[in-house]
Image (tube, rainbow, N blue to C red; front, side, top):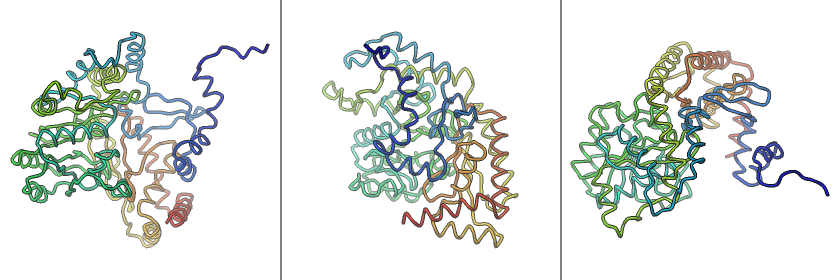
Length: 465
């Protein structure tokens, strides 16, 4: 009788046997447009392993990660302290998620998180950023007794139905109506805020202190003045710190850049996970939580089946410990300032480079219409086909020629967003600036593979209309 070896599940063996089918499996069983998109722009790489801010392919080539899994990998990949915490909590065989006890890890993580927002008192743990926002929307509506939430144009707060209702990007909302009856105002528009508050039905304003789409910061003084107006009308300020929180902008929270701002509810997720276990958290004031959970009959009025699970709580506690021990926030501020200054110095050298903005390690690089006739005609060709193609033309050679992973900061935007792991160092900054300079040199030379690829993108954009 043939011996097929040991039975049971072996993930290493499964990956060795089936890993090469990755793109075919996605095409057949998952989102079939993802492999198509990756093949089209040449992002169909095969990464074998990762550590910190770097990936490696099967040939041993290293890639610099300036995307951090859309901000999830704040500490980079596979931080040893977070890994050990997860091994330890699994080995402990805790009686987790009984639903009828009070495990210590959620309380300890809540206690630690709240030290960074001393004006807040309680935490609800869910599983993602969009769930953290959903929690804030529900709590704000219930606590104030008012139905409507205000949000800012071009905001991104998530893709579930409630958070989609406060998502300012039409491309995400199209086809999913009816949504909740919420209202957009322009980021920084205090007059619009006053006008909407006078209607008397506003529960709160949800705002990203720095918008992920386009990397636009709220104008100086806006958050503080908005807070005063909201409180005057018995409405709440909700800070969405899902991407901007946990050191991303050079402070623990981005709202802390503005003195006197104390949001009533704060949403966090992404980097709190350590890149391992999905987790989201909604921090809030005591009176809000006590109004929502007003009696024992309402003890489960808002809950999450996997919220507060031991693995997520251990990961979160490990992340906060590492951030404190390694002074991650101060490092992100210093490294971000260095990167932004180095890039800003290039603006005067390249007519296609319009602006560099952001805070900490959340940086937007915006491209704009050039002045010279030859480049202007090519820019016009791209814009006529689809706005955002030039930014994509920059992202692609950064990966293909220089092995640096970046992203365009939103649909129809000529902006690249840099949100690398907060652990990148000066050598990584040097590498990115050198690669970006080389790509800009190529773009301004008026020829070469970059503009050939631009013509390919134009054909693809026209074909998709």
